[in-house]
Amino acid sequence: MTDYDYDLFVIGAGSGGVRASRMAAGHGARVAVAEERYLGGTCVNVGCVPKKLLVCASAVADHYREAAGFGWAAEQPAFDWARLIANKNREIERLNGIYRGLLDSAGVELVEGRAGLLDPHTVEIDGGDAGRRRVTADQVLVAVGSWPDMPPIPGIEHAISSNEAFYLERLPERFAVVGGGYIGVEFAGIFAGLGCDVTLVYRGPLFLRGFDEEIRTYLAGEMRSRGIELRFDSRVESIEETAGSGDRLRLHLDNGEAIRCGEVLYATGRRPLVTDLGLENCGVAQGELGEVLVDEYSRSNVPNIWAIGDVTDRLNLTPVAIHEAMCLSRTLYGGEPTPVDHESVATAVFSQPPLAAVGLTEEEARTRYGEVDVYRSRFRPLKLTLTDNQERTLVKLIVDRASGRVLGAHMLGADAPEIIQGLVIAVKMGATKDDFDAAMAIHPTSAEEFVTLR
Ligand code: NDP
Image 1 (cartoon, protein in one colour):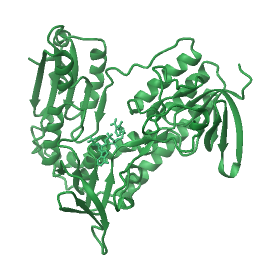
Image 2 (image 1 turned 180 degrees about the vertical axis):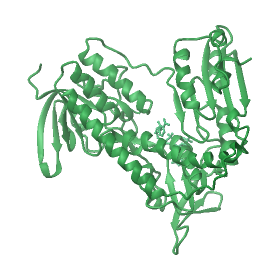
Image 3 (image 1 turned 90 degrees about the vertical axis):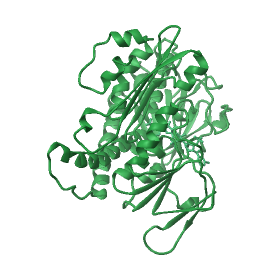
Image 4 (image 1 turned 45 degrees about the vertical axis):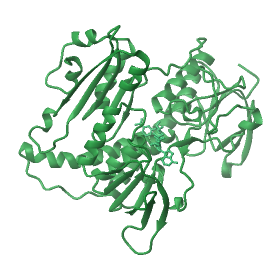
């Protein structure tokens, strides 16, 4: 117990902030969390959850196409974007309610409004019509997340970010995506599956920089064979709005060509959402993008101010923010200082087909370990053998030759995220190739390839 109004004041009720609040309250701390926008943050409202629902929606087109091979003669029914978005919105509202309930049942006070720091122990909340008020807290956690960032090129005001893509009123006939990261690749797949002509423009030679090169080369091939136009080594110099109906936009590229489209989605990264937070009132050290600089316990240079999630720009993934939240509440209130473990973080891109990975890429492993063995298998999934879908799956294990330890597991193909999730435990535990080989296969599956690689 302290003399402050709260033991912990959390700014931002996203994935990280909510988890930290609930866990801290579970340890007996008096906790409040401020939220100005939506409960559950980006992940629940304009990120992971609605994105996955849209991926599922667009994959239905494949199921209809493949059905004929299994003897089902069916016309592909019409698709209704408005109905999908309405259903998605209803589900998000349900989840918002669940988050509210979780905070409530944990005894966390939810403060609706915009919070900013006046000094390291004083927070001012602007609750709109509810007015302004000041509260004090022993510890403050900044968990405000990030926001889409777009380059300031002429005409950028005509572009949408992922935030708006989830609420488009209608599907454009032609859709363009700029950026070759998670969001660009995922939305290219979603809109192509839903019937749009999609062009993805990326400034480098191959998208998804940082992922295993062979896997992303393979994905590029699969996306092209689904009719998505990939323009690598290309930059958009300006966006022009044109009169008339149909494709209302022209993207002017650096090579002089133009791309016509009805909408352009910019997915060129995100920035920590630190504007007007009052960090400068407290002397909190920030990096180039405004990110809060923290140590391995998520503590800033101001001893009672902590930060987790995208606002720290470490590894900007929801499960990482949640892990950081759990470490933080253990450190602060569990009597067990717990540094964050950012090693072997698994990740997935919900492209079509999806990609998932844990551990090192082949390139990283060769740099760090020198001698590595690479095991791979390319195959046509059994489910597709009766269909005209020629998609192939690629699985890949990277093994340290000296110790036999599996350094990385990668997969591109149906169910890759589900399969890699199971392998994360083995890779994290330091399993060797022999351990993988000793595991019995489940036949017939795609996952069995990981234990039968020669
Ligand atoms: P990413 O950082 O993943 O990718 C940004 C892309 O935009 C890169 O291809 C980058 O190129 C390119 N880019 C950056 N600046 C410019 C510019 N000025 N002009 C042209 N291209 C540019 O960001 P996203 O927006 O895709 O996603 C944001 C974050 O959200 C990710 O970091 C990820 O952590 C998270 N996320 C995770 C998901 C998941 O787990 N499945 C799904 C969606 C988002 P270059 O490679 O050359 O730098």
